[in-house]
Length: 395
Image (cartoon, rainbow, N blue to C red; front, top):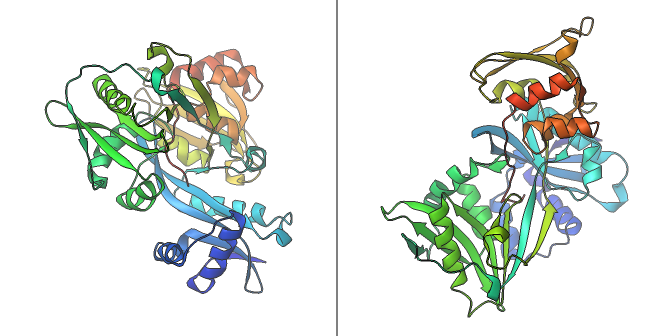
């Protein structure tokens, strides 16, 4: 068995496997569209005598972490023919993808799991949920007089929407920085319907909503805003659809506080685990990471375990400068110890959840995922920024 990229020669084999595994039925036109968007360098397959047995897609993407863009490898389309399952093919593909991402400078990876426990075995960890609201029309937010205007876009403008989306996305950890191609081939294809733009009194675009109304149900796929005025105006606009929709379904960040702002907060809501993330190269990731500026330097060590990416195994000395910049040095296996007071131990999943801001050091210590002295845990609490994770995308 060999692992290599899926070339044009095996494109139809790859599409057939994807169609079978994900139970998709595509027209000839849809197949042609897929082919026009095919990038052989992104598709990896496990082959035996030139036969495709299993595959995955590795997307070169960027995500925001503490307001800064990180190169990210997005894993998608992991699939195997049933007769070749449980033979370790996906395991080998995943380990190969980690090597590939590391070489490409992608220090973090993300995926949407079919089963969380499976990908946890390979170092990925849950990093975000989303909140889903089901709101009867009678309980929608009260209409308010606001400044600014709503402009309906009959033809979606990716550049205009990106100018609103990117600053919003930078407020969260784990959100995609979207390319123009991503808007055109992903967002406008998956999230069909209406696009409404909010402009402030000075004419600046400061919010938008992507939504659809069908069979008396309104689905809000994205609600993006820079400030409270934009939020109120967009919600007033949505509430004005009361004659068309008996119920509104909304996807929002897990820290969204809409129920608190409603006259009657007794709406149905769910908190749904969504995407997983994994630090690919701990040393490079921490070197790029922006810690909280405390006005003085901090030093600590971490003993990391990562059996599927051995370059992450070992003890690292980390110095965080007064301005939040970090320097990382791998310590010799013969002399791994430094100051025991500031030494911590964890696996790659815990490090990922902690540095993305999904879980705080104190909580990870309480549940036994992060070990070390209490003083070292409090040290991390001071220098790891408090952040909220979120993702509006799917791949």
